[in-house]
Image (tube, rainbow over all chains, first blue to last red; front, side, top):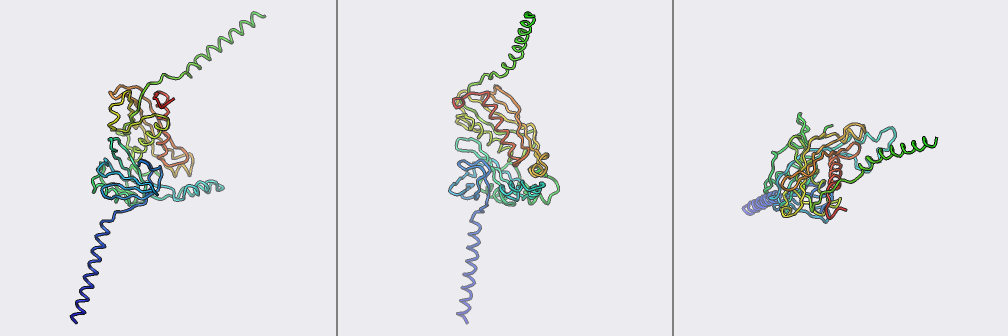
Length: 178
Length: 171
């Protein structure tokens, strides 16, 4: 009886430790977001697809073999916004324009909402750079919070992104006019 | 009869000269201002509410286009290494007008939804002496996202710089 109780206690303790450790690890692992870098990072092509995260005080972007880091302390401003882009890809979208009776234009009506993240930062010589990323709705605020927590500056208070804008009645200046 | 013909020919040649001279005079290139390098200041938009991404893309595209047309040295806003450059030209840009437009409206209707932006460009010396001032606009009418208007503006602004300034990099 005593042995079985001990075993049960050990099992519960072990299970509890696993839960706690996995929770701690989950908190430490940075949020990685799939993004498109429109412009602004050195040695990265325009419209490069990649992954963005905030790690060790840096805004970390990887696209294939290309890696770019921007120190959070060198960031002067982080601004989030919302926009929309075509739901149907570029090539198919262009081909659909050739559909008879203007039917292809129907494709242009389908758009998906995205978040934008605009970052202004200084290089080693004090030169000002600006980088822009687009990412899935709701991701920009997470990255912004992580950046601010690690030393980045921001002039704008947290802004409502696409998901929040959809619920709000007043139009945002960053939102594309439909 | 021959005298009348001669007079007619002379009148025709004179008229041709009078018309052609101003036309030819217009084609003469303006005197270019010598400069060793150009520094691009961040786009200002105090009067017009401009989304942050537009402001940054305008700035980045402007730098890219100036490098593309052959300016050997293009310095960014705040770059300390520009302080010791002789014959430096500083480009100040202020947004005067902005119409957001809509990519969806452009693609569906092809006549509505144009995005346009007007920027006042001022080229000065570091001490503030004005060298050239001009309004430059950027538009996207048919295909492409709204940010493409910034690319159009940057190309035109770089063209203005190319026409009025000469550096070792520009022929």
